[in-house]
Image 1 (spheres, rainbow, N blue to C red):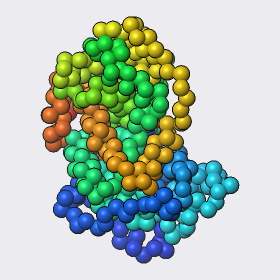
Image 2: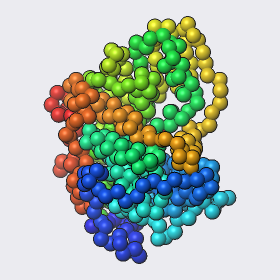
Image 3: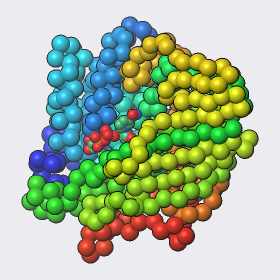
Image 4: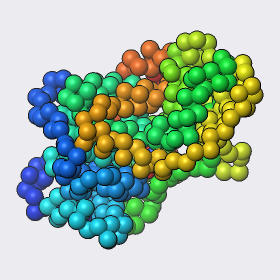
Length: 450
Ligand SMILES: NC(=O)c1ccc[n+]([C@@H]2O[C@H](COP(=O)([O-])OP(=O)(O)OC[C@H]3O[C@@H](n4cnc5c(N)ncnc54)[C@H](O)[C@@H]3O)[C@@H](O)[C@H]2O)c1
């Protein structure tokens, strides 16, 4: 294993000998069903201490861990895992500064910080609840392991980037249900009072029969998150391809899913929620008009998809990451009696209405709800709709990348596996740059994307 040096990353903790031999993790390894059941969920009573492990201490991981630590009852962060040491230390420092007045909530020691590509396994061992906020490509692997070890989970969206990943998450979700494990997924609009009330009214017919929806995540670019030249300068050597792609994960489909999956899933999930179902087929177009040259990876910067649902309803979806254009992050319903801006919490027309109630920060609420379910043994499994809304977004990317009409079944049963077969710092991801450092990207009409 060719580990980078500080400040960008450091070798795995040498004091823990078990990590020395643990430098590889096989993607797509043994299927969950074939693995021994290590542990069934331990019920937690309201007074128990709940131990949390954080996997992926980046921007969202720090936030999610802090939200988990602010839930009612005794909660402790006991372990952190990250692929890179500097990300782990940076994330932990931020959590520590937020909990200066409640230091008893932080119980991470040098021995419970785990660095590397298989660090997640050791952190999961120490926890009751695992908070997973790594790039989405790893989600099926990390979720599967948490379920295998019998742990409750909060995992960020999206939960997969391809058909095989969705199937793995669905299988692990079914197993989690069997083992009475509680699973939360970071689609926080489902925990936001205004959304909940608006969707309830739309499902109750307040806008009449729903004919169509429009959903948008149009904004500016998120990546590149890292540049090869900067990494090389900091490391004193060229980064390996695996290091580079993980640092610049947003620009690669196997890690990010493309922004239709990584961001726009929120709006597509609202459409699925309002319509109480999933699309049967889709078609669309997209491409790269802004992203060019070094460090721009392979993702598209715009996608426009038309989804068809079983009852004939169409959902028109747009997502764009190009500066200087019309921006909107929103969902809209058009019905026979009126229309609705769902996230604006309004219905216009025959049953005009506006939500005027309050509500907690949905990022906090989703953790309050999960921990309440754990402490009071309430059914809680968001993994299935998380996986199916991820598939909705993946289906959209398949359509824009290929230029073809694709059915839900084709997307779900897709054999196109984007994930590398091996994870070491020297292993090669499936997408590689040419001699000029430029990556191939999908060409509609030519690319097979399903
Ligand atoms: N629900 C929301 O509104 C919301 C908001 C932001 C991000 N997110 C989601 O959270 C996830 C993380 O996003 P982010 O913005 O925090 O990214 P980030 O780059 O800030 O953090 C990702 C972290 O994961 C680490 N990592 C990468 N591969 C790993 C591996 N194999 N094992 C362990 N650690 C690994 C990275 O080093 C980094 O510290 C994404 O899925 C994203 O979609 C959700």
